[in-house]
Amino acid sequence: MKWRIRGGWTELIRNGQLRDAVAILTKDYVTAVLANDRYLSSIIFEELYKALCESKKILPEKPGINVFKILELMRNMVVEEVFRRGEDVELIIEDFKLNSEFLLKKYADKEFRKILKEDLLRDAFDLDDEKYKEKRERVLRILEDLLEKDYCIPP
Amino acid sequence: MSTVTSQRPIIKGVLRTINVGIQRYFLGYTRDEDRKKILRSFLKRKLYTCIRTSQYINSGGPIDIQDYCDRYNECKMVGVYETVKRWINDLLQGLRRPGWSPGHYPPTAPAPPIEAIGALGEGVAGYIMENHFNFRLLYRPVRSSPDAILLRQDPYEIGLMEVKTTVKFPWNISKIPRLTNNLTKIILDGAMTLIDFWAKIYHITGNIPYAAYSIGVAIKNIICENINQEVLLVEVGVMRLELQ
Image (tube, rainbow over all chains, first blue to last red; front, side, top):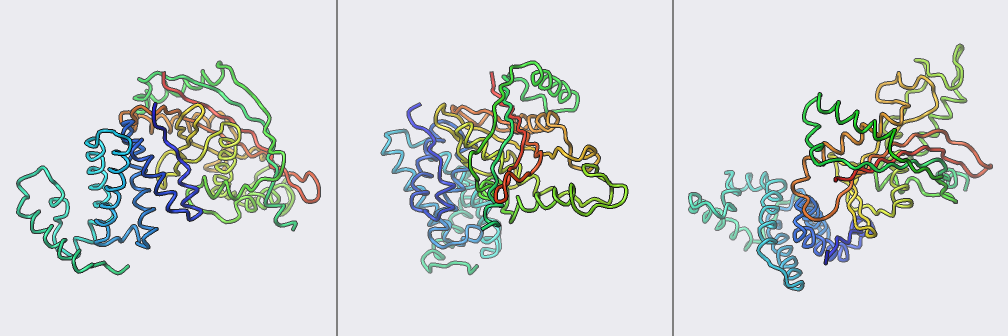
């Protein structure tokens, strides 16, 4: 096996070395996905999210609109790592999308339901379903407005 | 000074290791009670018939058991070792009442600190896995199985660890709910839990090699070696499960 899970990020997070932890987590996430280990990849994805939240002084349980910024950052880091390794990006994007949906559901769904008054977030990210196109566009527009205003739900 | 040293015991004891190869179809054997019985009897037979390796555990110097407990336990517990030590002292020496001989466990005895015993066991198991099997903690799942996910580079392996703890000394400790003095039983319980969990994740674990470690920790006693140094006597059984 060319790449191996490096580990050690638990200690780094405990010691507050978040930058190093995030770097290792990104590498390990890509390794886990490329090894087709979806169990580890889901664990590492969530830990990466938590580590980034901690480094940005955001509560992981109440990220507000910042969840999209964090996910975008994660996506960029992961894609950069994949390109650096010269691997196929499609598998990673698929896993990333699945994990993002789970993460939004776990941490952000309840909050957005309060803002939007409707449970539309999953529809908005159900990219394959044409049925929800209109709803999705509306939700995404609202979210973009919130992003422009730098809206963040107070903890 | 004495407080600090008393929190850093030397760990001594015996470590028994056994390797068991299980067929893939056994992963489905935790589905119902009948199949569970078959799997359990298979593992028990392996436990008695396979070659066991025994070695002594001796940490050499005092170790920070609280640090291991913090890392390997689900939530941080303050004074794990102290709590267990206090209970052992109360049980064996203090708070005696008429008709109570040391080592016996009457209804008036101090209640066992089950959580602290479990946390100490996880700490000891963590120490064993790091120092005898060269593992490092990869992740500690919260409120879910297994107890820890471990990683080692040589040979490259992900270890799923399940720890069960027991105490050895009061002869009738098996009468207390949630405690037993049977090391074999707790190792088998851990193995069953691990196989059940492994069956759930098997189809998504890809190419990374996995192994399952069911660890039974029996806390035998805490004794004073000299005035400043305590020794935690343990007996540890490790059952390594590998898919064939």
